[in-house]
Image (cartoon, rainbow, N blue to C red; front, side):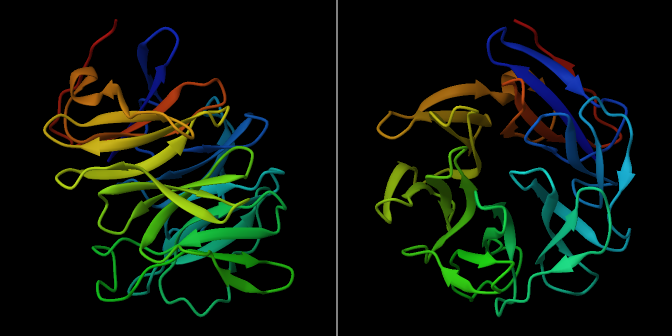
Length: 280
């Protein structure tokens, strides 16, 4: 089951988000009024569109389709997702935000993951699942697919990278190395990669951006799970949140920045768990 929190960066306070529901981490529409969110017994299941206050839910996908990682297009008209049917590989799909048919990308990549809309609202950047999800012997890379032309291109130098996250201005890209020990930054202007953070001992996960694109965040999975942040492009990594101190319970991670600038935190929740919040 999923449990969500919002962390107010300015006030340094933590509050539950949709506390009475088992939901996945949301993605908010560009105007901040709506969100794409999954609901089910785990962090992925049925995709819904709802208002950001948790009202007016509209079901968008079949219950048999396991959905994860939904993303709004920048014009707010479409929602992309990674999803899978029973006994099928992960694929990228999209639906209209107002509902309708499910559309699959027609690309020659067997397993697909982490869709991100490009600024033109007609192209999608996507990667491939981590090794423990599927096809552990298959090389990974990232691709851009245009819905109008049906043309697909490999992102230069993206071999060995996954989990793409586009910056708010569309000029930069965060990604993780396939072994999850490096956080990389790709510049679309120069077509160059650089490593922002490397830790050979501990695993990194789920990078995301601040609203203004000046900070890169990444989860650091160690003895005490935490969220690190790095000033882009040339900052030094620093601990931003100690999740183990904020939330007493099983694994938690930072996921995204909400329209009000707060950090969305997701946690696994078991029926027998008791949680405690620490306010500063």
